[in-house]
Image (tube, rainbow, N blue to C red; front, side, top):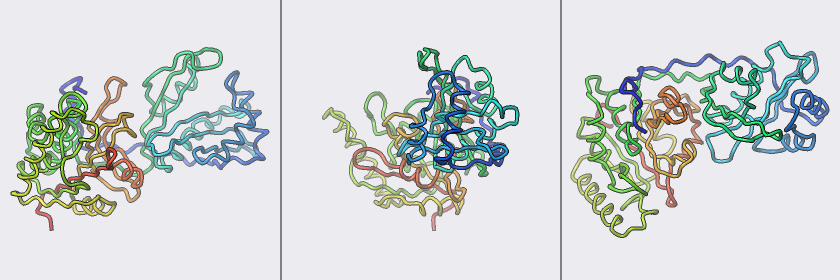
Length: 389
């Protein structure tokens, strides 16, 4: 996605940590809460109510979290978060407070508890829908950092439209980083953008601009992708990194040509194979170590602990909803989450660099994302300022 403004290239070197979530006295809903939950539902909503049967089903569903909050021993409200398997996304399906308990900040506490539940469940984005004629709820979401990114027409039973909101979750972990963030300027330059971020981190005098981004892409490209210009392969990026003074190690799960699963044109396949043969021949004459195996948790954690960074190939499906290979830069480790810079900023849905930098993703979820295609290709570049031990 092209830059809206060249100023977007200049990002703050650190991302301020968000305000810690408030303690929230919620608990999992029980069968004994059903009468009160149904009563709250009938008082809080005129249409699209959750039935008693559905509440019970959500209590038993492994991909749902139904929690209640109490006031003076009575259930005063609830939140319901749904999780999609093998996804980084979660959905706030419903949230409600008994009208007789309003005015005590319970809505805020429930919202923060829902965010924490989603974050602890390994998700880093929470999405929701809200009636466009509900200004109170819309104001609450905006106040707590949710951004509007879409609309569903004729969504509710009475044909009212729904506004779609989402928030990047950061939990209460420290995710500050001194690794600068640069968004990619083209749809096919995620790899160069990640390498440029690493270069700017290790080399304070490094000069980067749009010409340098395209130069790295030309040095690293696989020539073709599904359509349009090609993306960058791991060996090409490794050579570009070494040429600019970084020490790099490549972890690659497959030998031979890559990214050919969906290439139907024999001519394109031949050109891609030749380009990648050139990369392999040049790697063999360099001193870049290549290990043909899958990366694991310790590879990333040890690299980060030694002051290195990691360019990791992921499937963009879980983050962007499209099945394409995508490079991200791993910049930190909280002990439970890797912190990444994702160079893709979707300006069409009002994203900003702040939405895509210093994202905490749980270790298990990230390793699940870090593979692409039918072969389950895993590719990683471990980059350092000093020679590797």
